[in-house]
Image (cartoon, rainbow, N blue to C red; front, side):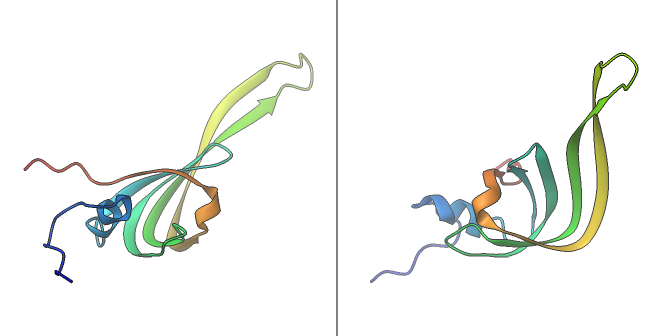
Length: 97
């Protein structure tokens, strides 16, 4: 078997392999988004991210009027294990070459 050339994309997971040690964007179920440095992943899209910024949509209901307000909450996490069954989308860093 031939060795894969460095930097080539033949299968979908190759794109993630090329994003190791770079910041990626991950869209999760339940309106959660993650931005962090990818350290490891597997075929189930379980991932280990560091320096993660998590953004969550939050719906608050005014008790007097019943009106809904949609806002966002952000938090920073030093190291995070992401379970792959919650992943909707992964966006690698923008490459300009």
